[in-house]
Picture (cartoon, rainbow, N blue to C red):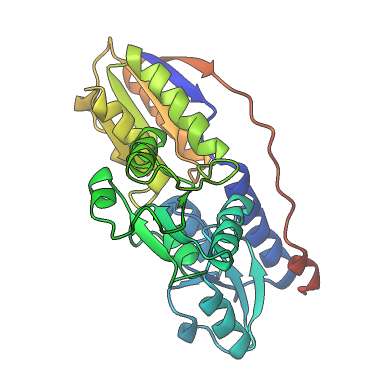
Length: 309
């Protein structure tokens, strides 16, 4: 067996920042910290922090007044921030700066009188937060068919934004449908799909051409991880999205398999290495790390951390 280990893979700068932020908050104040939604969409990471006394909540009513609350990497709406202030919560904003960029674009377009078309997945935490910035001005679409059903005319001021973790190819299909129907539509100065999402998709698209199997480390609710799995599946390659080594099945492989392994932007490297060790032991696999791009992005921790403790 030959393993082609995709690089880049795993944690992006935004996920690194969010996890470091929560680690530092625990170091400063100990257990008893709350996080609104999962800090990142990864079962392994969430379970690690839960064991350290962190409580993840889906409603701020679950957070006692005056508690410490972190906002996850996916961002939150102004309404959530308002409720946090009313409950006198001590908040730390771990929103990925690339998500914040989309929020600011939404506010700017709404203030300038645009109807905003947001390309994204309904119910995703990031989409909920972005739409909350200007709910009266934002319409969500997921597919080119959704574009066909939009009620806007050629005289309406329109702009589009995208969720940061979409499939690049699928997002482009929707963007092209928007531009065909509304040639005057305004786009952001720089695309919203984040560099890490693009890089990981590019690596998988390249490597899967020579693969018998694709293994993506990531959780089922991780949008960017699912997009990686879908790339392999679309090429006819058996593709699996798993949280860790316990979900591997020997009947997915044979001794001559070429296996591409990657990890979504919220999956830690430890789960990747555990899978590699298993395949080495069971199938005498050899590993070739395939580097397609170098990443050097780093985000500073939020200043609110300094006020804890």
